[in-house]
Length: 220
Image (cartoon, rainbow, N blue to C red):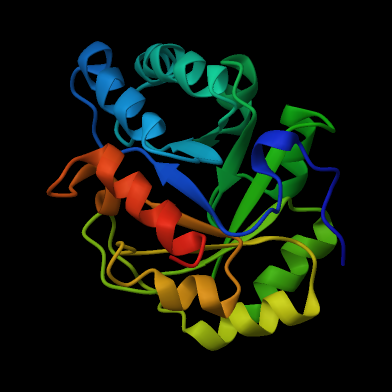
């Protein structure tokens, strides 16, 4: 099982950081400065824009503010749930859950070059199915309690170890990840750590959080 052709911004180098926006951004033009600070803190592979309860026009306006900032620094921008809107707003790809658009629908909307990641919870079967379909990555979690969303599934480190030993499709670990608990996930074989609150709510600020994650990923 091999990954689809890689785009440089989300390559499967040693473990890298995958940022997820807070669930709400009330003032995008002000919050973009927070994003810039985070990206200045160190290596970031990807930014997933995950905003709920917005209509299409409002979501597109937020994407138009955030996307150029990330892409200028070589960060791939993915939109959560909406492959159609991801294509229309110039995102690099989409992240889909098990209850969102199908992989086939996402590929049709994004074309052959769009990045598609798939939530697989704690399921080996779902992950293998996503990999066979051509997913660019599979996402496992939640590994720790999280306040960002209610987690109905709980993954363990054995899942990361199993996947990384057998398959070449990169895996993303998600759910309550902070600099304090990230190291075992890196050591178990996660290719990316998907983090939201662990960066945006860090007591020393997002740049310090990104720097801390980068140190851990490099074995520091």
